[in-house]
Structures are given as C-alpha cells and as structure tokens.
Length: 134
Ligand SMILES: [Cu+2]
Image 1 (cartoon, rainbow, N blue to C red):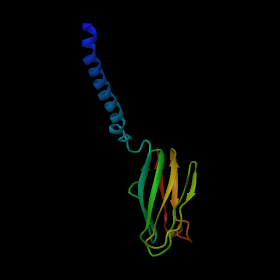
Image 2 (spheres, rainbow, N blue to C red):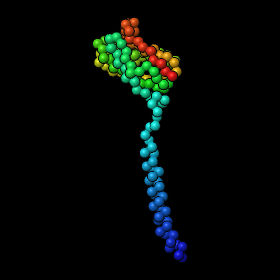
Image 3 (cartoon, helix red, strand yellow):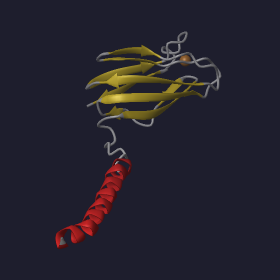
C-alpha cells in the first residue's frame, strides 16, 4: 500500500526527467552542428582569382590537396577565362566579359598545376602561373 502511494510521485518525477533528457538529446545535435573542419585539409577552399591585361593574380600559390573553388573576377578590358591542368585535372571556366565573374571548382592532388587564360593568345602574353599542391 505505502509503496504504491510513494511510487506515484516517483513515476511522475521519472517522467519529468525522461522528458528533460529527451529535450537535451534533441537539442544537442543542433549545438554540435558547427563544422570543425581544419582549413586546407578537407572541405572546399575558396580562392579569389583576379584576371586582367595580361595577368592572373592569386593570393597564394601553395595549396593542400583537396577541393578548391576558384572565384574568378575579370578586372580587365578583354574577355578572360581560367584553365587548370595538372594531376587528374583538365578544366576550363566559362569566359567572362570585362567586369564579369565566374567560378571553377577542381579537386587538387599532390603535384603542380598550370593555370592560364585560354582566350586568344593571352597565355603567350603572360596570363599563366603555377600552383603547387602538397
Ligand atoms: Cu585572357
């Protein structure tokens, strides 16, 4: 008899605790959803590229292996594009009008890649550069 009287509040308490635990469990994944990806080791790295008459400017030429998204801006007076060739990659962006933007995503492996502008004779006029991936 006494046990059943005492067990009723305990059952309610247990229900409240279980509910609180459920709330915490549901809330936890959202709190832990912040990506913890070290820069340059995985995920996509965004790299701004400027192209003009007649150059290709990158903020750096050394990269870690992984996916790179070149975000290209044409700051010149001619049409430009970006080609990338190296281990496992041979890719060309859309052609940008003066002032235009485009992007090119490539998966870089260890090695050396050539970047150049494939429009007209821009490569011969100086629009090329190397990047190194390790
Ligand atoms: Cu060009």
